[in-house]
Image (cartoon, rainbow, N blue to C red):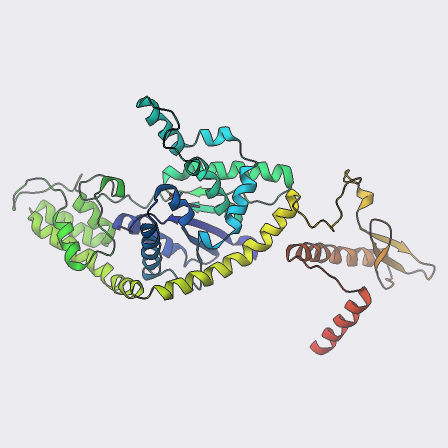
Length: 433
Ligand code: TRP
C-alpha cells in the first residue's frame, strides 16, 4: 500500500508577490494535483533560499505572508498536504552540511546560476567571484536537502530547475554509496501541458521583466493592468490575430475551450481591443474574486497562518527528526556509549545476531535468536516439522528488523528485560481478547 504512494515536493522562494503567471503555472496545477489519490504532497516556503536573493528583512516577512495566504486561499488543504516553512525545520540546514561534505565542489562550479554570475563578471572584466556569495554557490545543496529530507520521488519545477534536481540525485547517490541506502533519488517533473503565461508586454510574465499582474490585485487594479496589455493598433471592426496575442493567450489560460472558441470568433469578427480586454478582465475576475476574498481575510489574520505553519512544522519534523537521527548515526555522529565498532571493522557475518534452527531430543524442531556472542535472546516452542519452524523464523525476521530499526530511529535509550517485556505483552493480549 504505502509502496504505491508517490511523494511530490516543491518549494516556493519567498522573495516576491505571487502573480497570475505563478497562479496558472504553479499554484493552480499544484492544488489540483494535491487532491489526487495516491499522492503525498509537500509544499513549503523556501525562506532560507530567499535570503540568497533578498537582504530586506521586511520584504522576506511580507513575501512569506503573501505566499502562504495565496496558497491557502487558492485551496491548498493543510490537513491533506504537508505545508510548512523551511526555516522551521532545523534538520534542513543540518542535512545541508552532510550533503556539503559529499558534494564535489566542481559540481557546484557548473551550476547554471553560479556560472551565469561568473560569466557576467568575466565579461565586465572584474574578479570572477565579484558579488557572488557563498550562499548562491551553495544554493543547490540547500535545495537537495529540502528534497532528500522527505524522500520525494517527484519534484515539479520549471525547466530552469532541472539541473538542481540532477545535482540532488548526484548528492544522494554519493551519500548512499558511502553510508548505505538512505536517500531516494528524485526526479524532476515538468508540466508540458501548463503554458507559460505572457505578461503585459507579451514576454513571459516574470518579476524580472516587470510585466506582471499581481494575483490578488484589487478588482480596480486588475482592470487597469489588463487595459495596459500590449496589443497592435488595429481599429474596431478590423479582424484581429489570435496568433501572438498576449491577451488571447491569457484568456485561454482561464477560459473553457468553448469560451476560447468564442473569443477566436470575436477576433475574426473584429472585436475592439477595449471590448476584448473587458471580456478578459471579467473572465479572470470571476475565477479570482472568491479566492481574493479568502486571501484578504487571511492577510488580516496573520496569526491563523502562523498557527497553520507551526502545525505544519510539527508534522514535517515528525519525519525530519527521526530521519536526521538515523543520518547522524550513519555518518558517525553517535552516542559515545554505543559500541564503536572499532576492532570489529570487518562486517563479519558471524559477528551479527542470528536465527538458528535445530532439533531437540524430544524430536521437535526449534529455533532461537542469539546475539553476536551466542547469548540467547529468544527461544521458540517446539514445532512438528522443520518447515514449520522455518516458516516461523521467516515471519519473525522482518518484524524483528523493523523493531530494531524503529528503536534506533526513535532513539529508545532503555529496553526492559525479556521477562518484563513478555509479561507486559501477555497482559496486552489478554486485554484484547
Ligand atoms: N529553487 C526553487 C525555485 O527557485 C525553489 C526551491 C527551493 C525548490 N527548494 C526547493 C523547488 C526544493 C523544489 C524543491 O523555484
